[in-house]
Figure 1 (cartoon, rainbow, N blue to C red):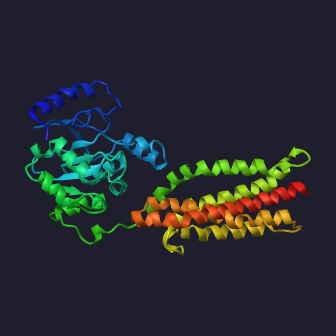
Figure 2: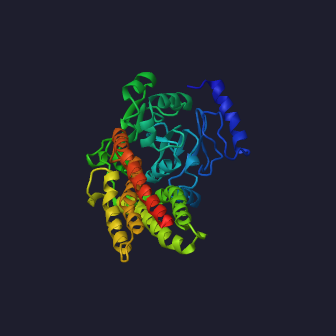
Figure 3: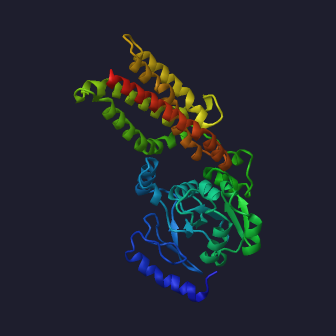
Length: 384
């Protein structure tokens, strides 16, 4: 814990933080008062603790929306340390969270109308579940943050409420032996915290379960769109440009629109199959993994593509080109669907690794086989 001399340094440093250090971290043990969501400060034995409210501002909502679309998510974090929600006192509960701004906002919004202390750990801006798996939301960080925050001087009790999803990273017995604070694991969902607190910090069986409803699955889609387009757009441009290559004229627009657009439609189908249809229909698709579930809608798209493409008169290049989607579309769809496995709590860290280890080689092989068939078709078309 900081000494009195260190506390005086912390308090004297507050004025320099508020004077205009607009985005930077400080070396102080107290979070910066300059952060946009801070609504003032609370005088405590360790200095001025930032006060936050449960109501989210327009700036908070806009920031959350931008992160949903993958904009600025790497820097969507807040200063670690101790915060006051409402007007807590020495008997108020202490809830521990990550310095991922989205997680912090959900937590304070869930505690609307209540006062509590929020101890924010430095997880490099990563959410609780992923940070616990990586070890950033772990025993060492919790112990260090308890010591540096001076929480022991602010509250009389010695009980912390941690998210249940942090259990894989925190050794409760070690935290108690090193700090004197007892760890209680709260419910999975932040919205259940009020009921948990009202019940004397006792969780029901339903509070211990993590579901993956349609609303949460759809919420993940926009970010996957943005990141997947970085792969899709170059592939579409490649097929459009390569398809127009002609032996006589060098490049022919008619070929680009015929062969190239066919492959673009195939890639677009794989894109929506993997990023949209699979998560939306996840419970009803066959298979146990995201990679396997991404195959079913992909095969439906393949049937539509082949039905539209395999029309007379047929030639060997056209047949080879058409059947390239048999491999390419399922491979791309399965790969894009598999990316959700790291965003959903229905799989463990070991399950994610196992799925990727098994599925990725098959996806690469399928993609290469499809590409090889298309190149063979294009070569024959040029030679003929």
